[in-house]
Amino acid sequence: MTEIVTAGILVIGDEILSGRTKDKNIGFIAEYLTNIGIDLKEVRVVSDDEPDIVAALNALRKRYTYVFTTGGIGPTHDDITADAVAKAFGVKIDHHPEVVARFQERFGDDLNEARLRMARIPDGADLIQSATILAPGFKIDNVIVMAGVPSIMQAMMDIVSPKLKSGLRMLSDTVKANAREGDVGGPLRDIAKAHPDTIIGSYPFMDEQGKPNTNLVVRSRDQDKLNAAMEAVKAMLATINAPK
Amino acid sequence: MTEIVTAGILVIGDEILSGRTKDKNIGFIAEYLTNIGIDLKEVRVVSDDEPDIVAALNALRKRYTYVFTTGGIGPTHDDITADAVAKAFGVKIDHHPEVVARFQERFGDDLNEARLRMARIPDGADLIQSATILAPGFKIDNVIVMAGVPSIMQAMMDIVSPKLKSGLRMLSDTVKANAREGDVGGPLRDIAKAHPDTIIGSYPFMDEQGKPNTNLVVRSRDQDKLNAAMEAVKAMLATINAPK
Image 1: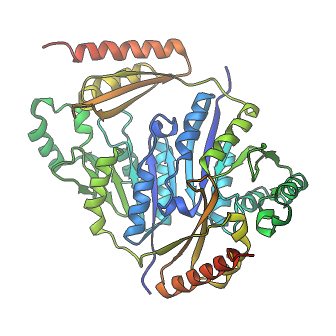
Image 2: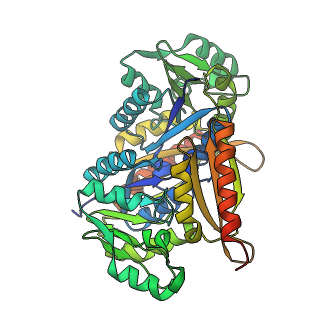
Image 3: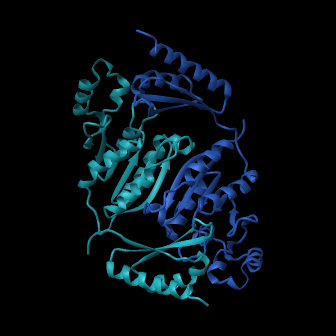
């Protein structure tokens, strides 16, 4: 059986916690990981505070196959992610010669102390960079450190993802119930019990006429088991929706 | 000095971790809390798994003044938040007579076992409900349990927020730097050091012409200290942006 590969996300930034910036990275990474067969198990958002970052990172990196962080790798004093990651791993951090060389070429006389901050990389980390990425991300052990700006984070995901091991992909199938969630809840519970290797979710929504409806989602790593559970769900819906 | 009031958010739901549903509640609650003088310190997202919910809830409720949860209070088998909260507090949970009476009036013969699930409320909790809210939320000790559907969660925030103690509100002022983040990083660090009771953040963005720019945000609970730091930031920007 193929290994199950898990992940956590650590979003770093006061601006998310104050509500000033609305996070767009969690949803993107969640969907990305599902598509490459990695199970996202937990997300944490913490402030630009070193002890908080270190504690959350250490909790997540010990629990999951991978941890993806976003935010805090820019040039200002509140960008402390690289230092916090080094501290969490108990390794040194210094200006990475390859990044410094690139910055010298790129910035010339504008290469100041603030910009050099972005060249600080923990010892032993691999850079995540490309011609279009200014401040590099990095991967150290099972932790992938990325930018907070969505377009840059997304470019970094594309660079790093081919190097990750991925598990057996979680398959998924959805059916619209044409019923209210409260009408399908009971039979759905029985179906979920009878199909233990599947995960059955129920997501209520209002249709275009303002009428309550429900999407039922069956997920499994095994296509046959998924199909069997979905058959049971559809048979249940046919009974519920049959003219009385 | 007025007490500082803190909060954590616990988002519960496989659909957020799979990327199927994009969370809209974190940003809303974050901004809401900032506006009423409560400091959001941490967010966690966990799956529909009782041990995970209990562990995260216990960690957050001991650390912060309030914890706000969203999701998992509907009528289906994967809605296990109320039971997990009861377990975290070590209290019993049963059908709440007032909610059952309302459901009987509302659903009549359609009141089935699944819908009755939504009447399960931990002992000692206060209901969060209104005429427009079907399944009630509840508040137990310092934990506020709300729906995952954004419009319902928002209605619940409006009901519960007048009952919360709030702290001295964090004030905020923003100035557009008209400079790249790397150009302001150094002087900004010095200003932050010289103004210890303020939090100075730097948020890069691309302007409409695709030119890199930066918003600088000064936050403080003390208006005078905020003003002093903002004056220093503006003086710094005037120097940086002076014609050479």
